[in-house]
Length: 432
Image (cartoon, rainbow, N blue to C red; front, side):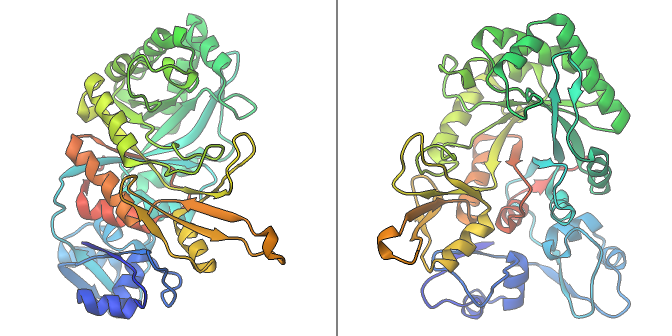
């Protein structure tokens, strides 16, 4: 695998000649919607399959898999253009095999709402060990608020790809917001705590979930021990019927002040749960000053602290699948950034005719542009921070460097080709 950064004058065809690969492979692997229009600073992932197959009339994907002794799942992973479906056509070139990934096994989790585009879901599931379906909230009486859509359909589709569906249990209320009061109410009342756990366990067993992913945020520090007790009781109640994940606020030390951090006891929660997700993102956020969403030095700092409290083989690193566009100048309390996908960010750079830059310290790409209204005096400068192939590569390599179990992607609602290409080239994805 190589990552090529587009220079002035580059084209898909000149890049293909430089690396000795077909231009068509670059286009399909990277899912380039406008291959004739590249952006200076854009990343292109170059792959080198060791075996390919040109589809002939009468071929089926299952037949091709049998011919080469590989699984359908492997073909889906090697060929994201298939979209996780067996539909092929004569003349299509399929990647059959690559060199063995150098960094070993990894477990992956992706978060999705029930309204996810089903084509995006099917394209992504081959790369996921777990699918966390967002979300079940909590009523004051301890019963659960179901997600707005059909989670049974997502559970069934996940099963087609050997992906374990997880029920995401949150402290979100009927208003759709995280509630410190609701979390404390449930955690500190043994009867409510038992009711919530029983409700979650009943749904897991009835619908075929493979476990529970708990995301309680803004927990008062006084309820930290009760939160550990909650996770312990949930683990005991589920038993062999499912795994228990816990999402952790990105702390640097045990006594870090702030409502976001004080209720998350890394050591206690890490001991009680099967796995934890360190939410290593949102340094750059909608209401904050412009910055990379997951600056690598900050990510490393959180994970290095987590390793002092939690076994490495329980830790999943959070990976963001989005960026932000900030209008400038930034004014605290007034400026609000627009969230956008990583593919959309490159498209915006193309539309605004601006080059993409890369911050070597933050290990993240960014660019600046001006809105062009009718009068130049009204032009507004913007800065966009997002994720690209180089930032994904840097984050994913950190998993093996620190010996972590895997990654959790927030979220998979938009397909980001580079992330999954690089993940598949670096690691062997574990499936159930």
